[in-house]
Image 1: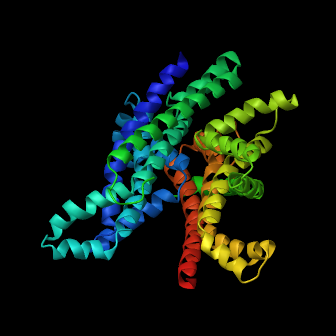
Image 2 (image 1 turned 90 degrees about the vertical axis):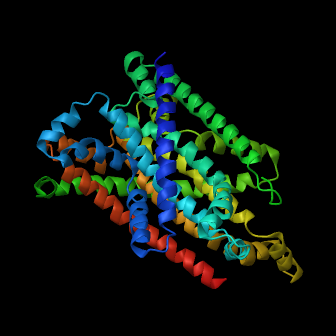
Image 3 (image 1 turned 135 degrees about the vertical axis):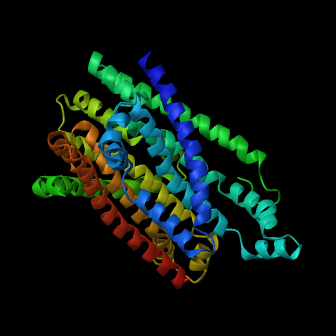
Length: 220
Length: 216
């Protein structure tokens, strides 16, 4: 029963975190290829900062040190929010994954050859139209496979939120162990849950990928 | 300003040393096992291929934290007595990271085109010579950047040994934090330590990538 509650929390965290990661990540990835230098620098700094610090450290920083950054009076208000660890975990998960999504987005854009840009412009499209009708639909489809991996990773990384006491699957399996000493069974059960979740994600993204396939390219 | 970090500097650095040691053992075991896994994944023998593929897909779909827990629980059953957190963490890291290194090695091997191998044979080299002078140099150069990246990831992952009570950097930071309540500077310090070491690593990885492109 504990494990079932945990699955629900894991799924919710993964999905909400994924929405944050996708929107923020695509934005930052686009910043990194923009023609303005300071915008590129900002995007690059974000990616380097979030990728080079382990997620666990980020989580601890936001959860324990984050409220202190707002000054004394606000700190008590923030700390009294019920379920703070859950919200912090989702935001931290989203921000961490966003840095990885940003890298895939950038790679997706730069994998489109110059000829595509030139061809689009020479058919009479202006710049916004070129991005809207040619480049973005193309780039988004190219990055579907790496994004599938990230989508899987976000569920796996959500297990780290147990360290700040979020009641998700891994935490529950640990709790079962501390109450009944059946640690092996409960962790094996949790492993199977993650496997099932992973298979579901792969199936879902596989359907999405085949729906959105670009005709004339090598199918996967 | 940084009093909590300064006062506990030797204690925290002791934790950093545990982190480095753990990463070293994880890589020293994970890369050789990863090579075996990679070879198993390109093997034509189905008795080798399917078990190895099963192992890789199984481990890659499970969070590392759960692998660490699982080994922590399963080891007492196998050897009869509870294992210390450190060897237990090392074993789970080796088993976990080997699957990732194995996949990198498989991808590197498969990135070498058939034409290059055939060209090697047609110039009169035998199987061993082709492997030694053509396959390995090309594949190794392609794998190196992702190998370094994965080594950095391994190093970052070591902080997850926190959950079984290993006194590494972040565990020690929480111990100090519980006594002194200086979260901003303590976790900031841990973040800076990880950032600097990982950033150096990522610069190294990028240098190899650039070199490879220049070399054609």
